[in-house]
Length: 239
Picture 1 (spheres, helix red, strand yellow):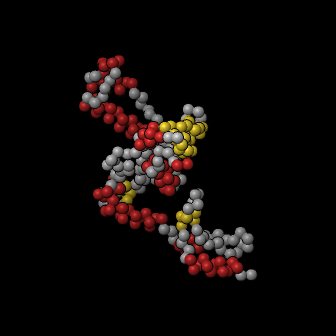
Picture 2 (cartoon, rainbow, N blue to C red):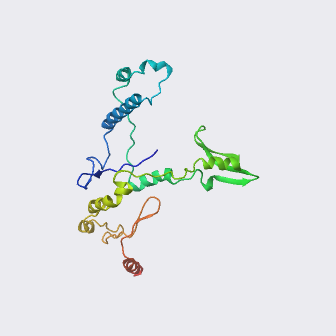
Picture 3 (cartoon, rainbow, N blue to C red):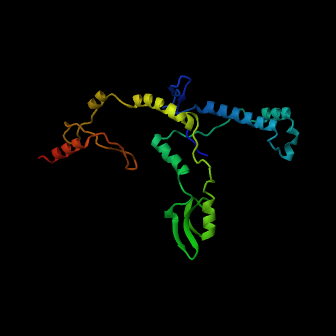
């Protein structure tokens, strides 16, 4: 189950606090490995003490909790390796990545080739054959049955929020969090004017940013007023 962890949190005074290395990573990998190992073994021992852990026949000699603890101590490796991927390039990419899990359907319309003679023909990716795209066909009712397996049960929450994002906390904490983050993100306008790039053609005129687009062609920023755009366009037509 994918989830997003914020690079920061609220302290006891209601202030936003960022981790020491939040600009590059959230947790050191070695420290994360040690904590994960400790939490995993603690949960395993707790499940054994509650009687929730079902041991196979060849491990019945560890039904006693003390014997089980000793077995873990001598058997489980001291150093664990936790796989940690590099951070994404930005919040927008994180949202798009997680959105594929939370808002995608079981099969998109462009993968359905045809619906004819009570049979649905569609494309699928065969992971057993080098992830190649192949075609398959199913009776309509079988196709619907498989599709409905991906529909969440009634009252099931697709997305859950915890911590300061929880429904009971968000209205109180989020406005207080946005203020310091906005202060950090708002640069001093004076240095920006000094750093305006020069025209590559004449080397004298200053370039003015009108639109900022992301890698998908979406407008990220549009600060220049329309009247200024018209003035610039008019000047561009002058001989």
